[in-house]
Length: 183
Image (tube, rainbow, N blue to C red; front, side, top):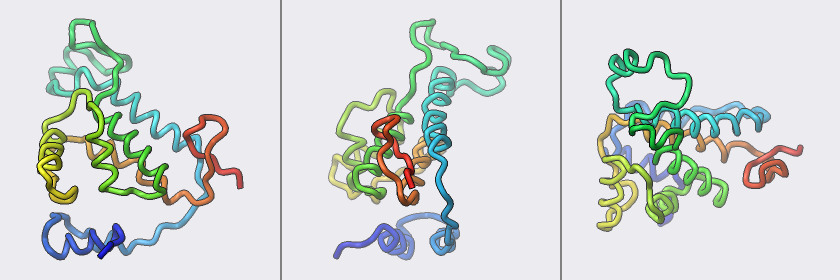
């Protein structure tokens, strides 16, 4: 039997296979539709990549040490001997993989998303993502592969999920693969 994402999520919640508080309530919230501002959406996605690039070289440094060493971060910093700075991490790669799947399918297709994630090299792959990949490659279903993590990668990758809710969107003439509302 094929489930919608909402049905599958409800089933996994009721089986206790997803540990989330009040998620059933969140599923019942109706969202007021507003005309999308494409510049803000593009800015959000560019902000993911730029912010990731700004923090990539220093994200693992204790915040107090980082503040003493660099002050308030306003420009690219290299903790790698000046060899690499301004490069995005795996978080940006996976965020834009999510955009790709949503634009191709019109919705977040988790099975296709995990296949897309692991169809190419992921630069600077984190421990949690590595474990998810290993579990998936051992044959586990996408919804069984998750690991407990205190990282921020999932938070970064969540931004594109608003795309399917933007009705009346057509491909942008301005940026080719982006979306623009001509209505």
